[in-house]
Length: 458
Ligand SMILES: Cc1cc2nc3c(=O)[nH]c(=O)nc-3n(C[C@H](O)[C@H](O)[C@H](O)COP(=O)(O)OP(=O)(O)OC[C@H]3O[C@@H](n4cnc5c(N)ncnc54)[C@H](O)[C@@H]3O)c2cc1C
Image 1 (cartoon, protein in one colour):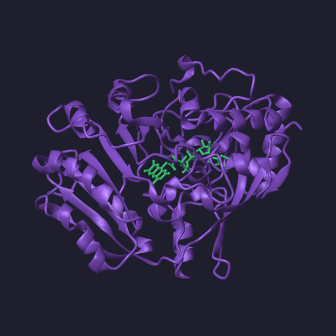
Image 2 (tube, helix red, strand yellow):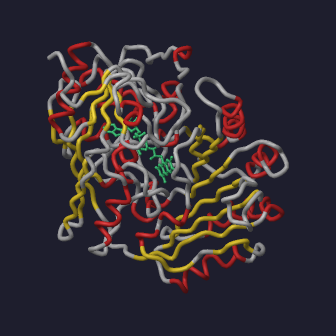
Image 3 (cartoon, protein in one colour):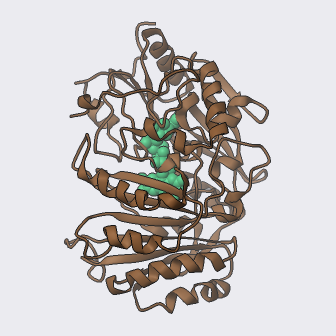
């Protein structure tokens, strides 16, 4: 095979720069061949071409999770494979590789159903699910990977496989990320949810420390049907940010509750009692409005995210975080604590590779580097996760974002026995580590993939 396909683009071709650019802009993939896949045949051709030429393969749907860019390999860009089918009778959906959550949410809502999507409907279904996927309904139902029913995968030999329970790779891909091949489609369960009691409470800067400490205690008191997170967000003082929030260091509590508005109001009353809110959007909403709960930015940007899965939200942690990146510290960092536990702590009927189920909270710290390579913004974020070390069980692969050294974190994303099993399966199914542009699990017996950091400047 001499060509990765008729639709393949190379550096300098019209459309190459647009097609390799996703949400993450700290750096970009620099493939020697970029395939805008329209179906399984394109994916197979691209993988067989890479195998024949000894090239690495990277996959991109949206770029929300870009960490290790390809340098000279084959990039399979899947945004043209954006199709979803909902079966209201079996309460399942099938989504192709490039589908975003908003498409599934809209299609499922027509039937009074909802997927286990996360804070942003813009995120890709496949990337999110392969690395676990902790969503707005996850304390009630578990993570997205727990409810996958079938995985359509093209493996390193270019062959298509349909994975179902009982297959070793079915265990591995549900949690093991993009390490085992290119997923062309996923079938997964939907849940009978069409409305939520949900929204956000925005507290002003003087209240932020008390709200953070109180949120920590509040999460210990709520039922499994209550999912929430808190974001500590320094809002820029620029036109475009609404006046009450502009220039303020906010405590933003996000709520997604599966219950009546009356019981929801009762559950959040202790939070509302903490002080006046600059904005209070809590109320009943259709699941199709779930993206407004976190209200995350959509535009492409440079961002870096460090994370920690916490066995416990330590009593001393709020003050440690505030000392480092709280109001008045003069550093930019968005800190987020997600409440986990409940259904997330239970192993699914069909086991998978998702680890750290004992985590009570996830800590994420997002900072804004200037560009590629090491940047002071990385140190700010890592300083916060270091402060959380006494309570840290490991990392979440989904929140290793904008981090070219993602391969260094792979071990921490899995429990040791899970990591060993993933590495053993990798040695069987991808012994040449073709799929290494990710939170990489090296084949058993091989060194972790090393990147040359000096080649990252655009
Ligand atoms: C604003 C924002 C909000 C988020 N909210 C949540 C949340 O609530 N819960 C949560 O769990 N995560 C969340 N995430 C993390 C997100 O789930 C990961 O970044 C995920 O990797 C994004 O997938 P993607 O396809 O959109 O991104 P991409 O960058 O396109 O893909 C990320 C990686 O997934 C793998 N991949 C993608 N498609 C395929 C495929 N077809 N076959 C094989 N591998 C593939 C590849 O390794 C790729 O590098 C959020 C991220 C952002 C930026």
